Image (cartoon, rainbow, N blue to C red; front, side, top):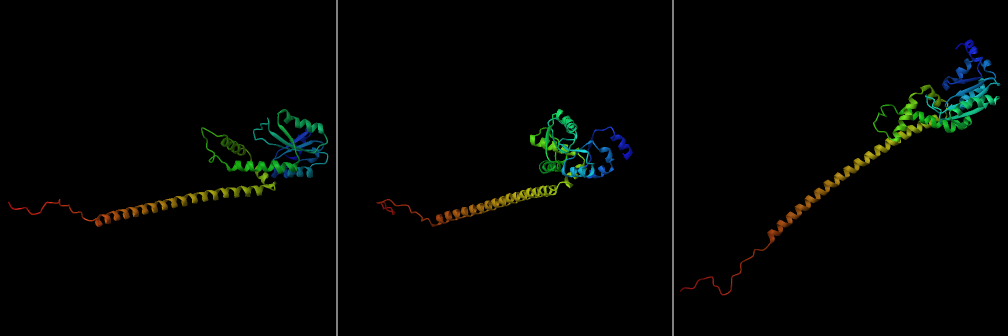
Length: 259
């Protein structure tokens, strides 16, 4: 909006919620009529916290309250049981800030107060790996099946969640997270390690099968040789056996007597 329209829009507001990609946050803040944000509560919602907090504290007037939040939910905004991580960066009107946070408490969200540094150390890294995994699992890798295991259903849920997110948000998670490149390289190395293990297993099984086949052929050849030797030995034994003569009974002459 042009500044004059935005100024008119901000006049009656007590709380201003900013939800833009982190790559556009600084530019967005520069286009706002900052004087109209004095004595208001500005709430920023991004998957990271250190960078947005720095932008807001450097841009907004000193009398503007700042609340940084990360509703860890999908685009459907299902708040029941969802962790809401927040930091009261600069709050002069505690009643107003608590009133805003009570919106999520009434929706039975899990409210977690955490510094931006701790958030980016623990939460942001896990979120980046989750979104990275979801973007790697496209529909071709997750076909519809009549029966699903719990693990497969979990993968499908991750893929569906990230499919609804804008790429600018994911890019912001990468650009403003110092550990993102490390985790991306680790993911690449892990995939290469799995591929090497698969190749090594295939080579081992192939070599084992070849060795077994070689041993089998060798055994067959040895059996054939043994059978030939046995047959030759039997033949030689028959040739060397002595010829037996019939015994002539005693008292019997071979010549007949004359009558």
